[in-house]
Length: 428
Image (cartoon, rainbow, N blue to C red):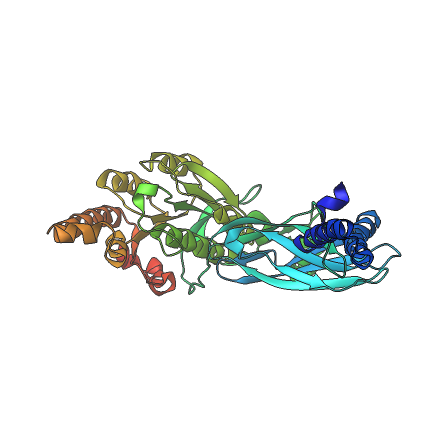
């Protein structure tokens, strides 16, 4: 019964034609037609028996290169099939499973695979959407040379492609971040890039020998190591506004996706300069990123989604309770006066605070969402005016408290406005 289910439409057509020819031969008494009918019926039945009873054993592996890409970039998927039996295979129809965001399912035809033979297949995948996407499982359809029978065998192994937000290279800007350490090191504020403190200390078991300070070792007569990489670590906090009502637009060009990309770009930039970050959202603390490990931040931002929260109170509370941050950077959507005042209070003496404010009015004008409908009734100008007034009031509160505020309109690049983060006059 399993063999009959494996018949293709062509195989079923052969079988039906053979049965019809057999009935006609019996009714008409045509022996030649009878022989033709038997041949036509036998072909799909024999093909089905051969395909279903042949124990092909195939091994499959998949390799993603790379397994982590930015939105819009391509990754190469390499499939490796090996025939681990002594029997050559027939026609193989190979199909890999992909989610819709990665494109259509790739299909390949392999004519024949000899005993112990190996085949490698490459194809490209890409996505404009962030996320973690499973790739696989792989299915192989084994067919006879005449296309009368197909038998599907599936593998269970899947791999994961991580599509991270777009990261924009940022120009170097000197920011202050709090450096904290333990033991004989005291907490102090220095630049995010860091001035090297080469004051040595005694060697301790487990210290990396590459940190040995040979000049001090020769002078002291005992092994000394540099303390700057072990005792000091710059710390900062990155706040991302994920509230649904605080953003505009849909898809990759929405203000929310631009905000996520901005947070990723800033995080990667500061991590490369040796800054350890706390990622905080409107829902509270989310993730801690050690310096030089920006991949963990990108993995977190790859799957972050909009929230239903109406205020930033949990995010502000997480920033206040965390403490120890000499640098606070906030990527914000719509901001009312009360929320701006709560953020303003986070700015203390010795703390550098930078706010990237998305110009939502420009998104409304670009997409023509609510603005276009209101203009039709004569209220478009008043809506834009209200939105602009609210943004100006929030900006005024932040700058008055010493925040450095960067305005990011729709279509603009963060790299173009980032130099203002190092301009103290923008906080005046």
